[in-house]
Amino acid sequence: MKEPIESILRTVGHRPWPIPKHSWFWYQEWNETIFLHYQVDGNRLRELVPRHLELDQFDGEHWVSVVAFTMDQVHPKFTFPIQFLSTFHEVNLRTYVTRDDKPGVYFLSIEAEKILPTFLARMSSGLPYKHSPIIRTNNSYIVRGKRCEIGIEFLKKDKISSPTPKELWLTERYSLYRGKNPDETAMDVHHKPWELFQLEFTKLNIRYAAYDGLVNFGNPNVCHYSPGVQVLAWL
Image (cartoon, rainbow, N blue to C red; front, side, top):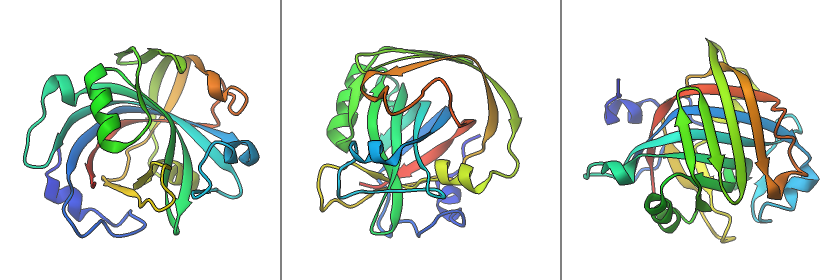
């Protein structure tokens, strides 16, 4: 059941900094989410991230993640969602950065299912969206795009009652960086904490041609499933 916006805004104890003082602009849901996390070589990663963004680390480790989910109910404040624009499947390849002591994520690639929402998302956010055919069922994800090919089949397992510090570091991120401008500020987002479950793969084939030398996509170090979160985003 959806939480009222007021309840989401009041739930802030898990955040590393306060939510912005001005009003949020976007509402969206990141539903049926799969996280695959990979430890990578920091020197190789440094070549792929703009220099004004510092690589974030957990115990000296650098990470990238494949995150697959269904974007749902996307709409600006005071409007309503339109089905053919507001709901689409998405897969992103992201890494972890910080700027001015504010940790967040930087996207290496974002694939989205529908052409028009992909175009609008790229124009409105400045993030590297590209259209790719995506097929999703309850326990599978298939992407056949120009930048990546993905075939995943999975089983949801037990709920993780107490996520480890590393699991929280990998999932609880509340700012996005575009990386295009050395003077940029973070794009802030807010949601309640992720509800995480263990995950077992029965099929896992992932290939990003541009990043094959960086990541062993067939062997994630950490993985999770979540039913999703309701997200508020600021411009």
